Length: 175
Image (cartoon, rainbow, N blue to C red; front, top):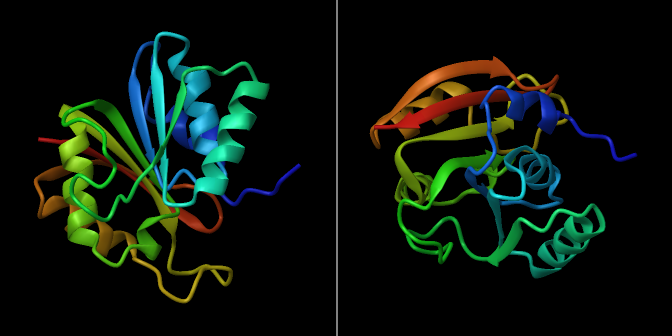
C-alpha cells in the first residue's frame, strides 16, 4: 500500500462528484485522484488525466484498465500554458489540481488554463502543501496566496478545509 499524505476519497467527497460529470485532473501524476474520480463519475462520465510525464500517464492508463475503469483518458499536456492541455474550452465540470501548484512557474497562466477548461459555474479542487509541514517541498504556495491567485481571475472561494496532515484544500467556483 502506498502512503498518501492526503486521501483522494475524503477530499473528492467534498466536491459531490456525480455520475456523468467530466473531470480534468491536472498534474495527475501517480493517478490517485484520477482513479477515485473515475469511480465516482461512472461509465457515463469522463476523467482527463493531464501530465507532462508520459511514463506516469502510461502507468496510470494501465492502472485504470486493470481496475475496469475505461472512462479515463490520459493527455500529455502542459497545464502552465493557456491551451497547453489540448482539451476543449468549457469541457469540465470539475478540475482537480492536487500537489501541483507548488511546482508551477507560471501560476497566472495555470489558473487561466483552469478557467478555460471549466464550464460556467464549474468548480476547482485545489490540494497543496500547507506551510507548517516538515515534509513539504522547499517552495510552497500558502493557502492565502493560492486563494488570491484564483480570486484575481474571477473565481469564488466556496470552501477551505484541512486535506490531510500536510495539505490544505480549497474549492473554488468559476464565475
